[in-house]
Amino acid sequence: MNKNILIVPGDGIGQEVTAVGKRVLDRIAEKFGHAFTYDEALIGHVAIEATGSPLPDETLAKMKASDAVLFGAVGHPKYDNDPSAKVRPEQGLLKMRKELGLYANLRPIKLFDELLGASSIRPEILRGADILFFRELTGDIYFGEKGRKNDGATAYDVAEYSRHEVERIARKAFEAARTRRKKLCSVDKANVLETSRLWREVIQKVALEYPDVEVEYQFVDATAMLLIKDPKKFDVVVTANLFGDILTDEASQIAGSMGMLASASIGDGTGVYEPIHGSAHDITGKGVANPLASILSAALLLDISFGLKAEADAVIAAVDAVLKAGYRTRDIADAHTPQEKILGTSAMGDQVIANL
Ligand code: NAD
Image: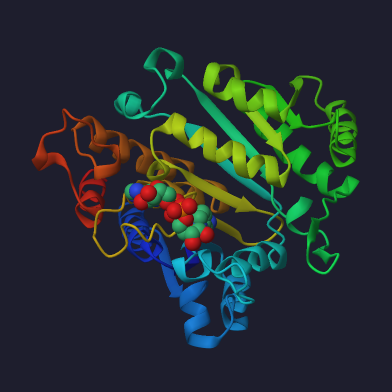
């Protein structure tokens, strides 16, 4: 198979982990006889420094022209500590999602058995948890009107959803549930929010087309509690942008570390695959970042954008084998991990590649 992959490392550890993700794609191409060609583009702080824009037109054009994008992270402490900055790295991310029509963010939360001890949740509660989140990505309070009034003393952000926006992600989530345990949990706050009442109404309507999928409706506050109390009860979860942002970070603790979780942002065009973690400036340049989320993002890319399921499974199996052999990056090591098995970013990549 011939494919063009755009590598967009972005900021901080995005640079370090994406380089490893790309090496894994190279190894897959070699092993399975595919021809992947790569181009690279700027986003975030590095793009602002180079061009003044967090998402230069050239990057956007390259994204649209590619078959899939392997993405790192955006962010820089300079902006985190300056809420008044007008040009910000995350504007690049939001614009990319809007321009590419990436309306669904998929986050598989699946724990590798070897890492049961790395989570702050008890192993007997975790074992067997396997959740697939669908977070809506282009609507909600993030994209509605925002501003200040009363001479700046009052601020507002408007949450908005259209029927169409809810319907298209609902279909993706129901389709996915069909290939899994056929359970869908729709999360909202319909007791309080009008957008949530529309959300629930649309899910109920789409559910009629999927009588084989069991649907449950839950308020976001209850979901936050149940994710920790009984994560095994969830199969596919579909929710709005803001609730999904928070719940998926909470759920990342089921997997033990932010450094383990991959995500896919999909719509009707090019898909973007990225770790859920940010640019992690506290560890940037130290060579200690966990590259497994980027490697697992590459696996999602192979599976979802290219339909290469065997190749994706080979990557996941290689990660599993490396963990079984006892290798860890610092973030997933525990008190029993021998010093010589604690690897840096690149060496962890070498181990995964050696297992492919
Ligand atoms: P973060 O995910 O960057 O880091 C949170 C903590 O997890 C840090 O202690 C970090 O060292 C650790 N961590 C994250 N990824 C790791 C990895 N691969 N290996 C080992 N440890 C890892 O979140 P933050 O600190 O809240 O944000 C830092 C910057 O990233 C901010 O500028 C924020 O805006 C940005 N951010 C970007 C994205 C994105 O690009 N999608 C997502 C979240 C945050």
